[in-house]
Image (cartoon, rainbow, N blue to C red):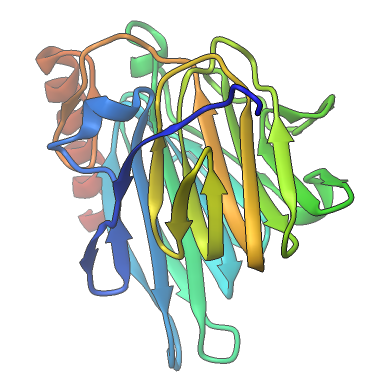
Length: 276
């Protein structure tokens, strides 16, 4: 039997309306550098669903719609509509405000949000920026039992076009029934989780079901995921820890109270500019 990563803990998430949150202020330091993972899903949506203008600072925010279209507007100058399968990376830095609206596909909207903290110092307080990557430019690796979409990072010597702020791997994976997926990540990416969008999987003897997050025990070991008779659609997310303080306001994360105050001030200024 291979010596592979193990599941340390299973999280079931906190559901509020259409959003299920799996990383909260109470456990924000457990998955360094990841500080948010939200699953947004709503059915029977007639027109649109989303959030009006609000602000963030100190984080990189990755938006990934998988059902419906996501209209994104932000103060960094990004005004884009993401189709299902596109990804958008917004670096909030010293402060940004944005508005996201999901438009349904046959009444369904579904998307995933992943945040990572920015490294303390200049990167944490840099000017905000945004990039959008179309699904056609995101590489797929097809193997006997699996298809792996490389949203960020590398898998089997294939690399995503996204130039990300810190070393992470973010993969969207389909595994056939009675299939197996194996990955040897960068040994410095010791932190991470597996999230089950549908089906169920086995990770080193632990079973994970749909809409569960399996926190991986920190280690440089490879990762093996197997399925039974159902097959599965999953996410694998791994990263190199930043080893810095995380101070969270819920919408922003910083390494110091001073930086949080500066980010909050910038967000207030940007929100005020909307009303003028």
